[in-house]
Image 1: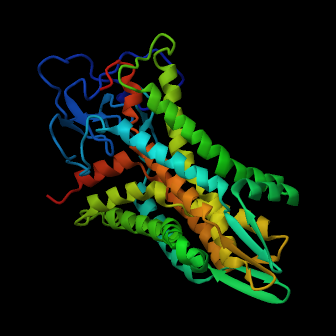
Image 2: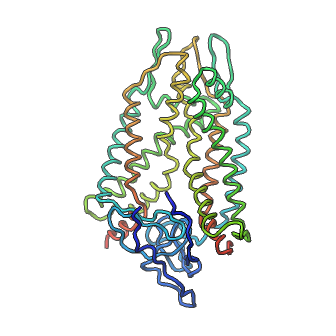
Image 3: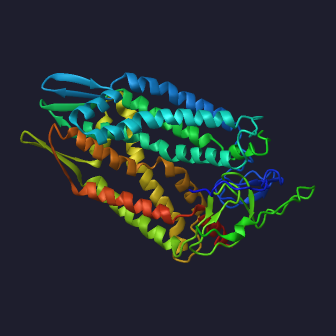
Length: 221
Length: 224
């Protein structure tokens, strides 16, 4: 999705200001009080109820399970009777030692940069759209909100890519079962890492992007 | 880049006691701004006048294309699941594994939930999503009325979109290949290429999909 360059926009008339409810899934407009969209059957809410509480809840859950995901082993390799445990970071270091810098970078970005960046981005968005938090003079109308909108879109798009490392573990564990020579089995961190990804995806989905634009009116509920 | 000018004219004012007529308006799903629901010509893109989100981008023969691509992807999925995916040989031992083996890798003890998750993310949910797209759109592509629960099926397809992770799995496979390179010799089975094609076809099918247009068409063609 792309946005136009920041421009002088007249204060738009929102569905809520006009006493109407817009459907978030298909865009159809209904009179206030209608519960279910007549076009697509989705539940209608002028703003998703309790959006921010849900965002915070899922976000904290995601952060909590991200800790064991980094402490405990992701991968357990047994080769000629010797067992080595690899954490997420350990796996990246090992790839660098092999000389595959590019792949090490992919794994590092997917399992460390993206999750941590997502925690920060979701937390930031949930903070700035708090009720009573007006888009003050610091944020010019339009430009700042377009930036937040972009941030939200990026977070929603990129979050699922963190699952790469879990899939890597799955494939390795399936393939490398060569009895004595080498055996790879998944570690407990694989579970907590995938939970962390799922929780933060739910956090991003609970966020109602219309709250970003409510700051323009200073009427966030 | 060719914005439809029709959607740039938002209804202004009239926030008085009389509410606006909801007919003929759409609200941007992203920012709630009201705009006139004008017909968008094929090939053009209508953007929200406030936040710039693309609201509608109808394409010629989109329904037919989406359905054909989704059916193709379904067939590819069947092949990808049952044929050998990767082949590993080290010290005279050869091990073939299919996509199902990769999924079942976690099937011991504590890892069992992860088995279900992987199976869901790379096989079950993508298949379910493709099937519900075909179910919702195929009758319309043929010029019939939508099927009985087409609306529910398309809603399911939309909800599943972030959770269908076939394309991420392909990247995971590539990383795994590099990791295992020092340990053994690896070669691709037919299912690997099938799965890669499946990812490509799914992405193509999604690029034809414009959800607001699909919803409007579903409503217009509803059985009277």
